[in-house]
Length: 163
Image 1 (cartoon, rainbow, N blue to C red):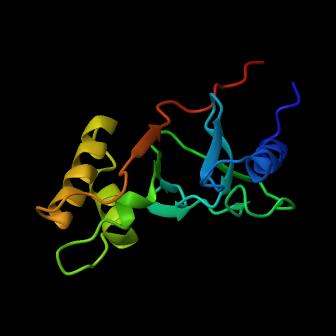
Image 2 (cartoon, helix red, strand yellow):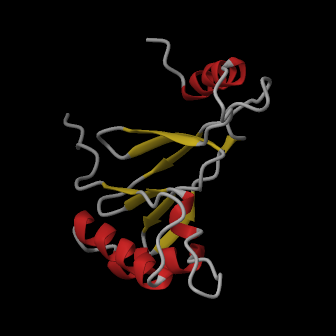
């Protein structure tokens, strides 16, 4: 009943700050997507989600700092709308920071290119092609960080109102 993205992150931030965990910080992004494609989100120091909509990629950047270090951190929520066919891609830093043999990271430009080219694929195909692009870039050496992605697509538009 009282669920508000920003308040939830502020409370979680205080819990992590007071905890005795060896690692006292967490990055995350909370996303709420309703049935008509309205997206409410708040990012706490996580890589920025990418929204591919109407031929353009937008980074969803509203939020605040990572959770834990600053007990007084405040967070802002962002709003956007996903039209039918739009794709929202969330990913960990292990995707964009995956390095090739010379130390060059995979980077945002390559991730956005994969999203742009394969946006029409089914989501399993899109994610498979993105992971394969990261693996090809990384080459034979093992990943040093997790490489996780989640993709969402709106399939239908807002219901029509009847008279």
